[in-house]
Length: 149
Image (cartoon, rainbow, N blue to C red; front, side):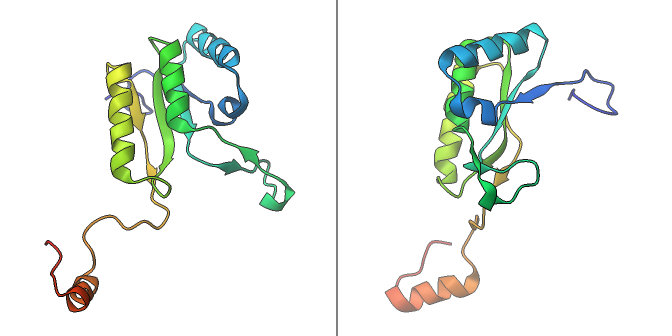
């Protein structure tokens, strides 16, 4: 594995495009991608946040909008054969994790060469895994059928 502090590998530089891409035209995004390639950036990253605050201001002072992560990464991949694409946060609160996996898998097929990564998933309270024992027992009492193990 490369990339890091302490492992002797090359430093990887990913540039966040979340706020920029939220309002950028195709031409503006193309120019930014070309500029990042020219300066030797490793890739771009985006975060899955619907709204942003900045400078420590409270949300009541106003918010900025973020971009759609996978649409943005697909556009960047279409504009560059070199830049890697990654998400920093991908929220599965708005979409089923299986659908997100399918979208990432398709993006990886289109981009190729191991250029797609997602560093984390913010589940925002969504429970992942088997139902708690008490809940399974309750389901059996109400419906008479036992859920699969």
